Image 1 (cartoon, helix red, strand yellow):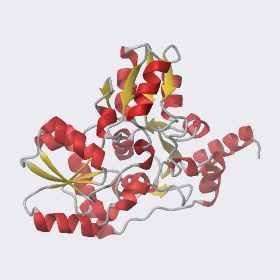
Image 2: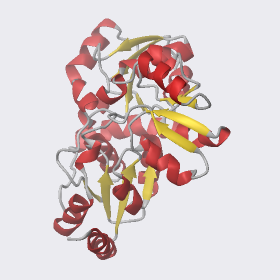
Image 3: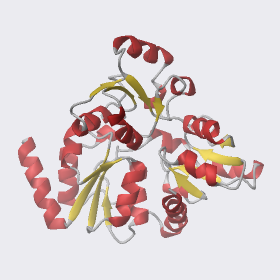
Amino acid sequence: MEKEQLIAEIERLKEERNAIIMAHNYQLPEVQDIADFLGDSLELARKAVKVDADVIVFAGVDFMAETAKILNPNKTVLLPSKRATCAMANMLKVEHILEAKRRYPDAPVVLYVNSSAETKAYADVTVTSANAARIVAKLDSDVVIFGPDRNLGSYVARVTGKKIIPVPPNGHCYVHRKFTVQDVERVRKLYPNARLMVHPECEPEVQEMADIIVSTGGMIRHAPEWNEWVVFTEREMVYRLQRLYPEIKFHPAREDAVCVGMKAITLSHIYESLRDMKYRVEVPEDIAQKARKAIEKMLEMS
């Protein structure tokens, strides 16, 4: 099927199913173009609560679709590809949390939304890269169990002054780990007038050389402050920023900063997902109930 025909069929099926498409900033450009809502994890979680539709097609990775389902238990949530998964979220297991709780029984468990529903059920509150430091600062504890991204945890520790216990010890995003000090030095020479916006999942030494350290939502908010930026996150964020601010220059820090899980969803997958109502996201009610409390606490505290 040609691209135009695919888009027309997706629009027809959306109307027929009373469906909306939610997409993350790292999705392929053609997927971003057809989304009803585009955003980072926090923005999409907020929008998921207010959605007026029977079906949510989630163009993101599995933990995001699970979050949408937890917040909308009576709606049908579809993940268009089973390959759309997050390697970092999969690193965190329930036993990592239980072991940390044995060592630090009074420490609250703060989990990045980039985690499975099963692990979220053990969280006191969830966070995103946009609100992690703010929420941890509000907690009445100097020690916090935090996972699964160690780099985001070290950023939170630096900003709040609190002791962060990382679970697992070396949880990370393989895309953000690609960025090095050498990349910073290279782009500073290549684009001498540009400022650097760096995601807090990047290595601490890369963060230290940034002009600003921000989530993808923060990148959108701060972009108008300067006329040229190098973007240290997943490559497709540049497409989103360029669409929003055509008068500003944006450069990807690395062309190979690509999340395979995010790129697992294509227009064809979205069409087939709506056509066949697949793949339905289900979260067992006992897990969903506990995870919902942690997510709702995040939304209240944000």
